Structures are given as C-alpha cells and as structure tokens.
Figure 1: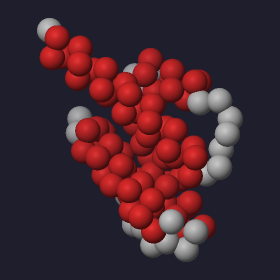
Figure 2: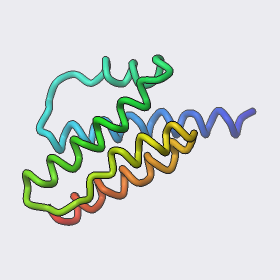
Figure 3: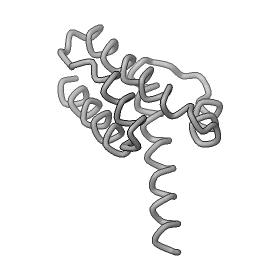
Figure 4: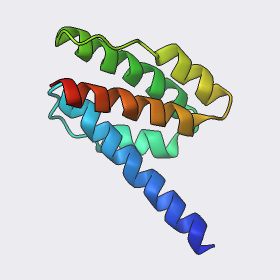
Length: 102
C-alpha cells in the first residue's frame, strides 16, 4: 500500500515538473493549475496532452535552431497502447537534450 502511494506521489510530482518545464521553454508564464487539473482528472486528456506537448517541444527546439525529432505521434501511440510512462520518459529525454544545447 505504501509503495503504491509513494509511486503515485512521484507520478504527480513528475507530471507537474514536466508541465512547468514545457511552459518555461515556451516562455509561458500563465497559471498552469488548469492544465494540471485536466491532466490529473480528465481520463483521456493525457492522450491529447502528450501529443500537443510533443509538438510544442519540437517547435520550440526548431525556433531555437536545435534539431529534435518530432515524436508527438509516437507519444500518442504509446499512450493509446498503455505505455504512457515510456512516452513521458522520451519527452523528458527531449527536454534534457534541449537543456544541454541551450
């Protein structure tokens, strides 16, 4: 029981941090609580979110002249197959690449 609570708390914190990083990348200073609540409470918003945020990461990288593959369709497919943890890991990897290049 404790293990699942700790795991779910880490998932919540990781999602919050990923939203925060993507918004910082796009210089978006607006409040992110609405996006966070949608992601946590609306069942299929997660599928939409990974696709649109994958697009946003690749667009921001291109705007800065950094070459990153647009994996948004792959994120979408992985989420539909129940492998959202893999899509989050790949998205975090893209964010890390951007951070190294900046």
